[in-house]
Length: 510
Ligand code: GLC
Ligand code: MG
Image (cartoon, rainbow, N blue to C red; front, side):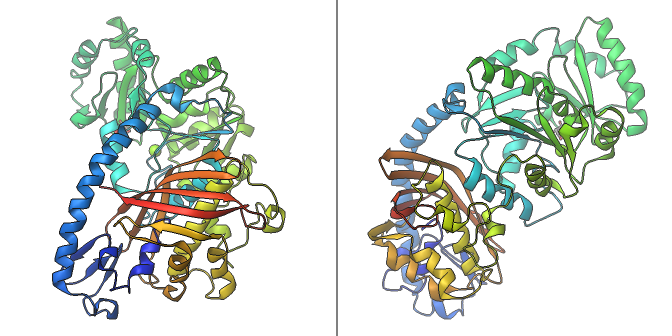
């Protein structure tokens, strides 16, 4: 369940089909997401012949699922790609607009601890009523590269290429209105020709040259001088441009209307015109191209603890409305969480942190006060995330090994409920969960890390909720694995989130 019950089936050699993915190498065998050495006792029952057979069987099944998924995906994409799909009818509690490199993503932490903490909090407490927007200097291509490498959530909206491209939903549908606006006073060919006259400007990768962005690199000592001269030249050519210097080396030439701040202002205006005024907007950044974000009217901002001098200096000299800008002491995503607390924008402790001690505590909404409350919008979603988090902590031995902690997992399972595994086996959900109790600490050494993306909750009927999500997991030495998951939960008094689990269905993704 929740991508983790696969572990319950490790020892069940009587169910050979119950292995989602089996890879063999001289060093290790990957079973259900974890590498085991070939000498591991869990493997003693396995016959290599069976393993081979299972691999082919799994592949064939996957192909069938792929074609089915294809249809589902198309539907999903159609939904999420439209602006209306992203900016739905319900009120937006928080519009969180974050830069990626060195703001959301800490490139110095190979385990992405802070980002996983953020993801965990977002899925549990914000995904049902808030929008996540990435605003990055990266082109969509470089963004995809990063998305493959690090545990980034899928945003509702992506503002790419330093505010020159606004793309919606998982299908990344471009905002054509924004494209047309940027054409005003912009002639890429002329700008490029002028720029090439400066011999101390070096062009960046081809992928970063975009219809409304020309990007180069320049030594920081030459930057001010070049920016001044280039600006004059382009003005003389009748162009309306903006030149942005970031990271002490990157120089972007954009249409004057473009930039991270302008793009956000455009988005906010668009939302307003649809009656979708976010209750709060938080912008997060670390470098020069983020400065504009902090200048957008009505937003609060966090400068992460590791921000570059170019942003910190700007803040010291020009940071107007300083009470609306918070300088975090923590790095990257941890700084963002700090700012949620600073501005009282909502919960700031991820289940991963608050469930750390005894696995069941919740300082945000104490279990006593939740008990007996009818499940509200977001409760089923929170249950999915908390359950998943506690399960992860159980097999990683990050919570105490006692019956009370484990009971948090079994008591929320409805009698007669079932789980369908990605490999096509149905099992009693209670049995699946219970069989995990002796697996305490099995991932202690290579730490399984999971994150839940694209989580959505729908109330199907009174007291019945459908939750869908993408579950991802990775462990030290293991490869990233993903599942599509669907669960039915229903209201039940006395449960930590006011709901119990009725059915879970998982499908392995490509
Ligand atoms: C990203 C982009 C690059 C840009 C820089 C600063 O690194 O890939 O093209 O110059 O951000 O905005
Ligand atoms: Mg950055």
